[in-house]
Length: 490
Ligand SMILES: [Zn+2]
Ligand SMILES: [Zn+2]
Image (cartoon, rainbow, N blue to C red):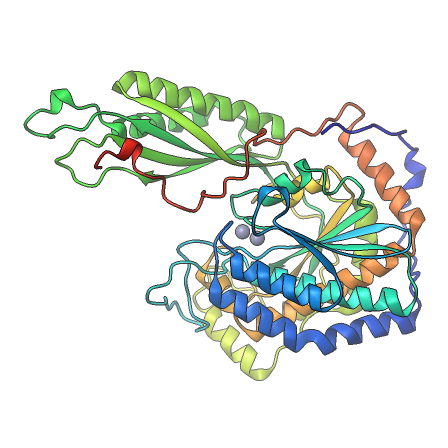
């Protein structure tokens, strides 16, 4: 997909003053009341999806539940878009006007199953858990969209509202395929949110990344009787890892490289003929990610030569770094400040006090009541596939306190809180803030034009979008083990 470059407008277009509210107070109150009314359903939906904990591209029930709610509320739902069975676009259109998109996620993480106890407690027979709170993400975005639709109808607002059901955020890069398929080309602005441990509009730059699996193929043999006949695929993996660990010294220092070995043979007395490692390369600069990834690939080739094995690899994910819209951040900040933080009951505070004892960082629990305003946050940290959208359409999001302060994402503590009313209260703050922001944008063509001009300027005149994962089809199997090589016993 190529982008037309527009005229670069003078910086005078981007005044630093706060956004002037355009939606009348009575309508704002009605939007907020609509979400309060819907919050029991939001909570039930979030907890149902939390209980299912479906991992990337396997979120069949979670996606279907959100689609059903949107259809019931009057949206037209197109399922299975961009080659992903669990992706969808829900639309509500009323006349001609701006197109505002809201993102919904719903995938869980492997290996993080946890009850809602405030102490570490696994669940027998269950592996995955909502350690990134995407159960809340999907439920709140849908509740928010339903409230915006009601406001559009009540006030005869012209335009189109969309909910993008985007699967496999965790390593599957689901949104990249939505962008690549052109599903955002006619969108004026995109809103999103993410569970967290504080309330703030997020304008920091996340990391671009490429992730993929390196597979080595060798020859099996008895490890004691005829080792000279064997060629160990695991040797290939280990030599590659050593080479990459030396490579770390010679890449830009803000680069992150991490891996796990996902297949390493099964018995020491059999030379393994198949082994695999799963790599991530990250940097805020997508160009650096691309160049370091190429060098990691060379390390794999060198390891194969050294060990007499062969290697191939598959890129399973690739995302840009976030390009948050400053223009839209002003609108969202004002709305978040109006909505305010969360108020916990004495029971919720007691639960949080117990859980907090397990956290490495102790932050005041009362901080969830506050709004941090606009968080310019440090560049770096994790990665998100929202980033590819942010290079395509003016995009802004917020974090809300759905977890006990000090909780890191992808932890059992995050899973536990995401299944409780503490999680739901943060999700309600997000739903209200997104709904009020969408309403403001529907009525502010000037703001949308400024946001567009800002994006064109930020990404540069010669920018052409090329997905970091290339033109591959969605990696629908990335959460499943790689099948045995050529049917050989491993
Ligand atoms: Zn995550
Ligand atoms: Zn997440």
